[in-house]
Image 1 (cartoon, rainbow, N blue to C red):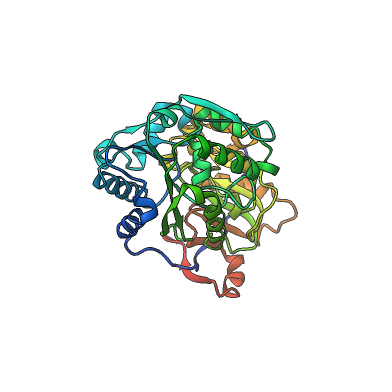
Image 2 (cartoon, helix red, strand yellow):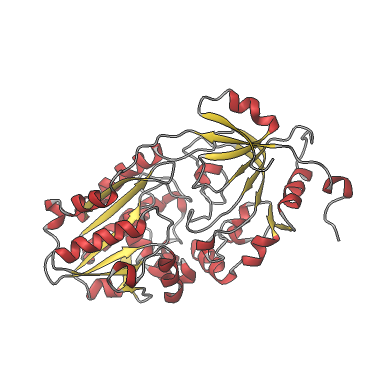
Length: 416
């Protein structure tokens, strides 16, 4: 049975135009050389000694050049006579299972063959204690007792669920990534109003008990290019990460169209953001109560696909109004539920209305708009919240594009 009246199903949709958004382009020209210089700094190199067993913690985010950076870190450690290996550090991602986490790492090119060292995942954790608000802190048992040094490698960026001076980065990887499924679930019992405090306390507890030597911080610009790689000693990790969070905020991309009737998102995924999409860009969230970046007003949202690297984990789809049958057919409910139950946000995994295809999905979203003129629709299409250099806008938004020096009209959509 059709879900739209015939006149609604046959209503023409507006012509779309390609638009370029302009951001700062500062990035590293030679990533490998940068990594080597950072690992050879005296305060870092002196911590790596021959025969040391070193756990290099790698997570589940879609970080550009991740395999290149990790490979260089490994090579520098081996050149110093150490015995590094890679351990998955991604909390409840990958379904919270060893097999799922290894599959995620392999997707990013983190394999034993490519890295030249063992690649492992664990689920055994040890209880370390509680924060001042009674939140239990757990940490990987192998890293506590069987290694000489722990080195988290992670991107520093704004978090998708809370605002604080410390957000996503090396510290969060120690607390949640190496807390594995149990530690992740425990930490996420903390209210997001004091989540930053919880991360700081848990990080200090871990640093006092585990042999964390240093971390490798990665930052990206708005074009998803590597803009910084920095080795940070453990004793300055908290302070330096707060400084890097401020730099990350300045490099975040934006969706520069301020008023949108229907936003069409081509894909979400765990490789794009922890929420599948970045709430800091769309201004839509079940958890985040404050947006530190300018965000658009969006009335309805349509989702077309799930990224291949997300393996059916469509965590975040609940914020959308309409999805396509293609999205629905890919859903890995076990992974989605493990992720959202650990996060404590069941709204994220609710399944929206399912339309047959993109055309029907957009028409459904248009139909349920309130008080709009169907002849003057403000529709925007983006690939995802990680790739915002080129977007598409409907004809009624062309005046907005022409009035903003940060926006450049390229032409009609491809194939139009």
